[in-house]
Length: 163
Image 1: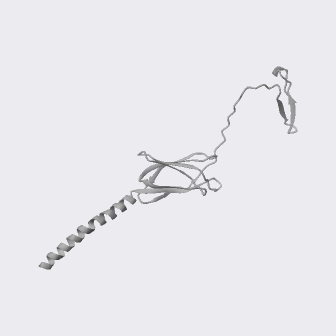
Image 2 (image 1 turned 60 degrees about the horizontal axis):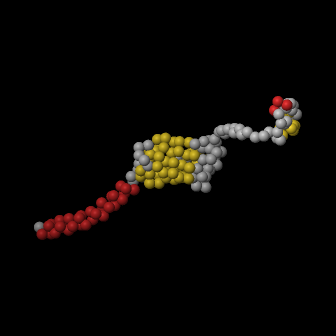
Image 3 (image 1 turned 180 degrees about the vertical axis):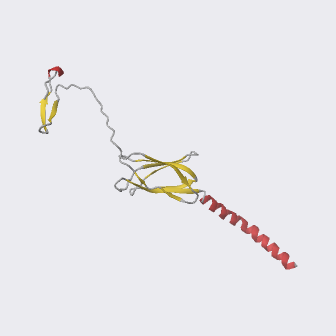
């Protein structure tokens, strides 16, 4: 009987002594799995990598926001991202901006989002500034011969004759 009591006391002391260690390990594991990550590679339509692109990961439910720049090999990575839904916006010089919606980051998992960016369409704008045109030369293209002919503009616009 005495050995049973002694065994129960030893077991209780061991349980009490190891409880903080077990709880600390459990907390560390829980903390490490309450986040995930998002990573990938950016490429152009021909398959070449895109370095220097700006990526922004934004939570749709909270104020969480992180920004990254793709490395020389086109890689990017967001680590320790709280679980939830996100939008990823990518901008790069010469390419159309792209947004991925509804990226679901799960606990302990890495979400791979490899993207191919489209070439941006050229937006043209013309800026007209006034200046004295009396000393400027004009070139006219003769559509029959595809050669340029130079003519001198007169000081008075109504005195000019077509080239």
